[in-house]
Image 1 (cartoon, helix red, strand yellow):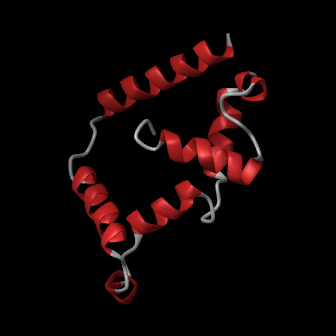
Image 2 (image 1 turned 135 degrees about the vertical axis):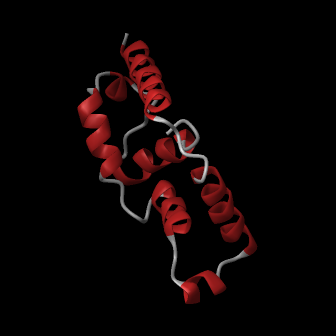
Length: 104
């Protein structure tokens, strides 16, 4: 999530008209934020990148641009280095603390 933060910021603005660095966002609960992230469409900046990362159709992959291939290859390489459960929980804890700090 940290790696894609800028994409999340621009996707919230694109789809919901919510500016993440606004007062409206500071009052948002964690569960609402998670639900909104989950509901981001393929037409948002994050949705487009996720689509590139997840593509497996050979014909579509043949038509990928050099940049699309770079994005997909970087993601697949990083995904190969799986995060263990303890690290995941630490990262989620950091994210929750960041939201708490923003809400103050």
